[in-house]
Length: 162
Image 1 (cartoon, rainbow, N blue to C red):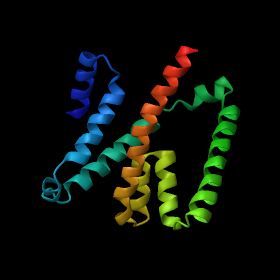
Image 2 (spheres, rainbow, N blue to C red):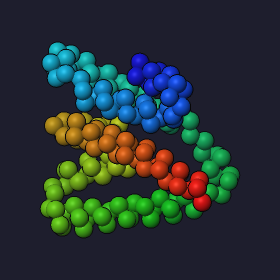
Image 3 (cartoon, helix red, strand yellow):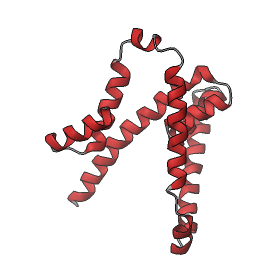
Image 4 (cartoon, rainbow, N blue to C red):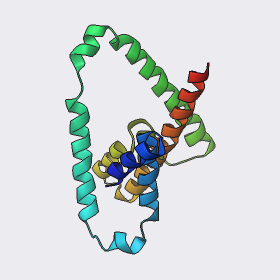
C-alpha cells in the first residue's frame, strides 16, 4: 500500500518514486503507535521472515552470471569490491574496535547492515540467535538505505551539472 501510494504520489509531485517510497516507509515504521505493534503478536516476525526469503530468492533469480563472465567485468569488479571491503574493515577496526571500543557483536551486525542492508542483517541476527539485536540491525540498515538514497541523488544531481 505504501509502495503503490508512493509511486502514485511521485507522479503527482514530480519527484522520483524511490525517494518518496523510502520516506513514506520510514515514516510509517516510526510513527506507528506501539500499542498497535504489540497487539499483532508473532505475525510481523513471520511475515518479515517470509518477505526476506522472497527478497533473497528474487535477487538470486535475476542474476545473470554468464553475462558478467562474458563481458570481462569480473576481475575489475572483484578488485573494486575488494578495495571497498578492505576500507570498510579498516574503518571498523580503527574507529569501532580501537577508538569506540564497541563489542564484536554490534560491529558485525552494523557491518552486515552497512554492506548487505537490513534484510541480511536481520537474517544474520536470527541465524546467530541474537534476536535482541535484530531490530537495531534492521534500523541501522534502513537508515543507511534512507541516507544512501538521498546522498546518491545529490551526487547524481551534482555530476549532472558538470
